[in-house]
Image (cartoon, rainbow, N blue to C red; front, side):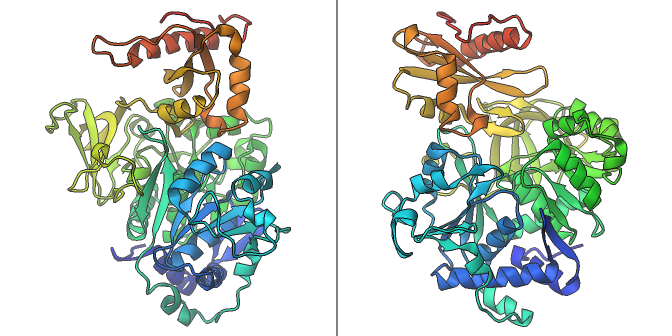
Length: 554
């Protein structure tokens, strides 16, 4: 499979609808679309968006789980000419408020339920106009740019619109009109939020043409063919899901099998029923599958290829225990379209487990001295710097002076690694970023949130290494008196207000100041060491039964 460098996402949808009209494009729960049906649905939704005034320069926010509606809304907004901003479905009130304020969306498309979780109370908090208004046509008081809420739901409040109205929008179903209808606009972008070294999540801009070329390169490394069936249990609002897995399936014209919410037992049933051949994995997903009582090699016998991000042990486990024999290792981030390197699927398992692979076609990886910026030799550890298939930058960054993007298009990752025989080897994080369960957690973002608690005078969040090779967040909290709060109360405060993966695993309460260097800077290294001791003692079962840790001095 190959597409010209200027091919857009919508070009690929049109191509698939003509070359493979009856082929399955996407499956989710009990819904599915053929390539032709997907193209027609995208055309109708695009026409519906345009009827609401959405075109080039508009922004559409999307908060939805892994459902066919996510893909149709995503593609339809791009087809209308809008930039699509995908929001984290694990967001709580504070998270969603931050993203809506920053993204300046004209329209928000949202699902009303995430599994058993009712999202309507949260949506009613952030967009009360949709419930208080007797009709559409309002303007949000909190987010002046926002003027419409489109709900993927059966019951829709009077001030909102139904997504079904877009799907059923009357438009010419003749596919010959499709390119003229939706592709003559300037290429709209995709924006995905990811944590970084700043307090707020960064909105990473991704172009359609680069998404297509990157997916072609990744699929080649993985050995993807049209006969494959790609199982996607990871969220589409992640680059790993939306920019990698979804796009790989699209450009290689193979069915995408979405799972709305990962559940090991349901996953095994889905894999067996849909005869999935490719899996997008995380270490904890692979482990939970094999730990499940229902697991048997027969249920996953069709899985032969895939990708996993994790340590060597995770690659070996996925290949030998789960049975994904040709699983690929990779390195990357959202700024690199989900991946800068990938191991070829036909390398030996030992080779794939101990390397992040070769740079993808169109991507250049260099290792630079983090102090001088000079290029260093093979097997020397330095900062990983990526060029080529790289984001054009962040959406409305708060501080241009600290941008990791250079004027010549290179991205300074803040990660450490080395190159040997052309292969990239990831060593660790040079920044303070915490990576837990495959998710980036910004310490500054969590610190900013915790300071909304009146009991907290100051806070520092650090990462501690767990035995699994993952990281956990530890929060050092300074309070006026140890009696004002405790670990249980702080944990509850977080769980009710922010996404669960951002909640620190341990809280260390103290009344003294945090340690500082001789120049007055916060000594994070000392707190990291202390955090590691706290987690290691607790994780090894040597902790006290008390829920409060009162470490007075680091």
